[in-house]
Amino acid sequence: MYKDVVIVGAGHAGAQAASLLRQQGFQGSIAMIGDEHELPYERPPLSKEYLSGEKSFDQLLLRPASFWNEKHIDMRLAQRVVSLDAQAHVLTIDSGVQVGYGKLIWATGGTPRRLSCQGHDLRGVHSVRNRADVDRMISELETTRRVLVIGGGYIGLEAAAILTKLGKSVTVLEAQDRVLARVAGEALSRFYEAEHRANGVDIRLNVVVDYLVGEGDKVTGVALQGGSILQADMVIVGIGIIPAIAPLLEAGLVDSNGVLVDEFCRTQLPDVFAIGDCAAHLNRYCEGVDPIRLESVQNANDQAKVVAKFITGQAEPYDAVPWFWSDQYDLKLQTVGLSVGYDQTVVRGDLASRSFSVVYLKQGQVLALDCVNLVRDYVQGKALVKGGMKPDLQALANSATPLKALTALT
Image (cartoon, rainbow, N blue to C red; front, side, top):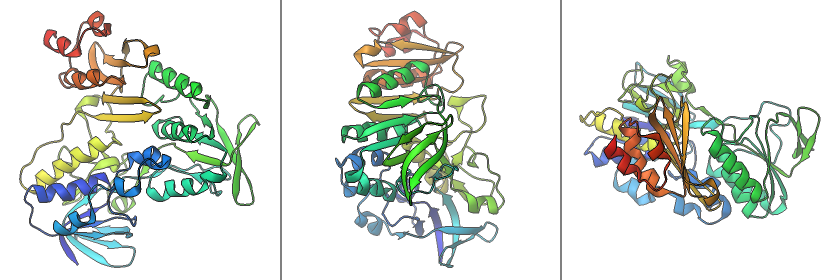
């Protein structure tokens, strides 16, 4: 079999690349290979509306089945690429079938980072990455009373919020001295710790998991370094992902915490692109650091656009302002920019009001904003980030001063 474009990965990035190629007028043949049984769907709601039952799976589909048929995109689901001959432009899937390609777009995302300690494979230990993961969790909820969440990042906290609303007793275990330590400043971390505790979540900091306890093949608890054991009917592990790039590495690429790509998302292999969670790139909103991976819908969509335009002869380099979001309880966090390397923070508004922003700066220049229940700051703050503005700090701290006014004054 031969296709002009083969897309490996049927998540946000892969689906967007396929649809944008058609939108840009690409007339060649396209195949998408995904290792799940489902058509492309939204992943962020898995740990929120889908887990809580507020949304059915059909509501998560990015496009109906008819769309892929009408656009003549060959969907090859429940198949996994096991090897790649980059010089011959041929890949092999797990059934043994070989697929030739003109261009290859690698959009596989990543696999959940798993615990390596004793008991990591017990029944009742879950990751939150795909539909099957969450379906397994849902099937156990009726008999679950106590949940331990390992990892105080966004995935862990979102799951904790939903499970608490479902009436479960939830404990979050974080190895560092605050939640969200890798992605946010201390003010936001302490705010979310207080919010979760106010909702009944037991937040435990500076704790390290030693091993998981079980009876038969079922998890019953988590043993911490120091000797204490916490009882659990379910354990959720949210400690990051590992980029799913093994065939590319075997084909000659180097693991750079992902696949290194240039401004057009090209790898060093001929006619092979990489986009989304598995792609590492230099980002101008994170200058002076190593290439980074952005695990976000924004990055997946924007890199897909870059590749679709490049393949259709309209090359435009990647230059998107990063943004993210997280929903926990009645709190909507919206982030714009990257706070990596900040040396100062400014809080706009009162944390007690549950509507405020944290602005991250480096040598006076705005790097990023975390906006909690404050859409106005999120929308207007983008210009400060994009322009590398250095606003007056006193005016910046005054929540009564619109950020758009600071853009005009800078």
